[in-house]
Image 1 (tube, rainbow, N blue to C red):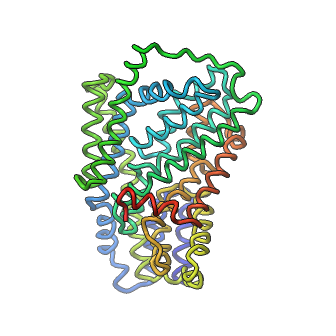
Image 2: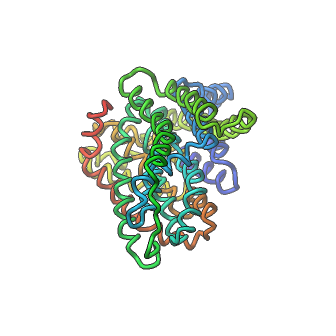
Image 3: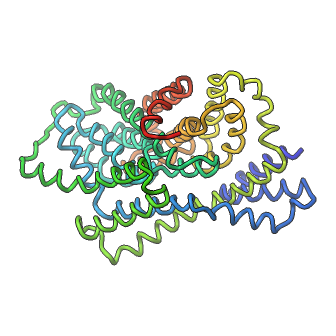
Length: 433
């Protein structure tokens, strides 16, 4: 009865058009009222709501969001693209590889696929089209390559999962490096075959190599942007600062580079930057707070234990359990955005993961990666929508070119679930536990 009330009230809230956060609060209140007694006390709901965002660890999220906004306005995007173009622009389909590696570098600065796609897509898609590349293929590549952003540290979904599962954010960040590299390799392999199809890239690409003086200037400009992820990763790995402190350092560094080095960030524009970051942070933080209330009543009513009871027989077979959980995640991810999906599914799946003796950091990487796949799959596909807007392409035209990337990325996800050493061995190298 309690499960029915919880699920039906949440789905009803979503169906009538409530934001996910409000739908979560609705199902929590309905569950509390169905249980009755002391748990339906409004004070408990209010206190739990506040506790959902009152976390030092959770503060890393708005700082990294702010850092990303500053970087977008400070000229870092353009210099990253120019930097990659020096090394990759001369090969067949070179702008495609520039896009892929620019996405990887920019991912280490932003941590959000939607933000990265908006920033890079606005520059790269017109650049590729003007060079003779197919518009739909270019838009699909930008969308698919940006799936690395929520995996490569600093990652917003990794922070959300770490807080929800009680896992070290530092460990999650370090564990995400290897899968981000895998995603980049997969994108390169798919683009290699796509770029050799007729009509995808121009038969004769015109690349004018920069003079040594120009190359030195581009390299010198790009090095400042490339230093930031190095500072963050080295600091986190060495334990010099926490994930939250890394977010503050990223903000200060981006401000200094944007204002004093590149001089593209103007003081008069800082107000807009802070407002945009505040709006984005408020949405995610309120969602986390609402999910904390829902998670509290899920725990009190033992919903996770009841829902996972049918899967307890899989606890003895870790590989089969991982495959089943990943299938559930990908189905949910097709219809729900990454953050609410993580917040809803984490408290349900973690008891099973712990019972099976699966490393929660390793599971978190696979879990987040599988959730991220929904960003480029209809009907939600927020990254697809951003790429369509940036490339002036209709949704039905971009789905076909996106599918080869989506299929290969899905295969990668299941490979990581079946062969844990692909994640756990690099985790050990980077000091994650």
